[in-house]
Image (cartoon, rainbow, N blue to C red; front, top):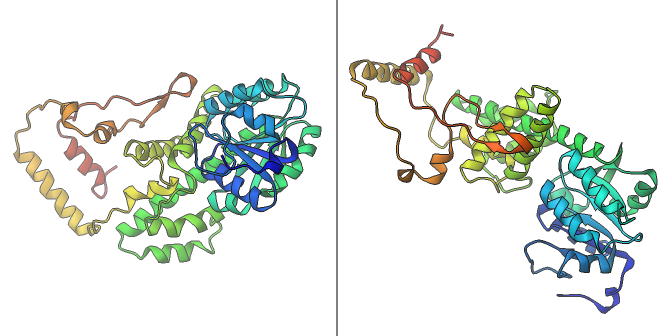
Length: 373
């Protein structure tokens, strides 16, 4: 552990950071550059300055502790580990994107120890964290928010007060619904443009003055075209957020069709092993390297396939054995059912793939033929 003697005792200038993922790591580095003494802890040890042995040790050194863990369970476990070491001098700032109920439960654990709690969900990816330019959506009491503001200002360009604890989490989930849907729509649009043989750069040029253009599209479209899926915000985290949205929707009888579709595409990428890639990797399936066929070639191929099916005696074949398939291939559901349904407590249950029906190819081709519904 690399610690200077001058910061070995708790002071108001000491800030603790828990969770050294993309955002937590960037924020810790930025705070150091701005003059704060930063101590860090992560569930898996990291070779970084001032890495301490436990959350309890972090609480001994720091009055202010910022939590950047990834999900509901991790947030609740972290505040439980901290709780026995908390005193009225402590303030906990929770930055995780979780269900509103989980955020409120975390606040209750902290406040039982008479410490203060501020919910500070954020928008902004890796570059914004490294530059200290996140936008925080905050929730908490007026007194706690006033005290937290100088700490949050050190790593943000804007702070938006939403309401009580849990309210900011709800807003953050809602904004991510739009972000995920926007990137999924952009991926499909790129696929259409490419299938028609048009330059994808022209699509970007046409989008720039379009009313639906956004900062997200400005950042992601060029990377999608170049197949640069280096993570700024990962598939696994965006998928988690869409699952939270769908779970909330079930309890309020809401039909979130677009969000569910975006969730399914993210799940597909998870199943194919791209969970740590940027969530814009959903474009991968629409931008395959093989040159797209012309419409005439597709029609000819379809007619040949249909003729072959008509002339072939189709026997009922057993389903392939699981041991003969790769785990990733076995995980992908190619049926017409939704890729997942949300079970109790937000669990993901993959539906069973039905056996291939006789004449399936003929039915599919008939749907694709001009003039057919």
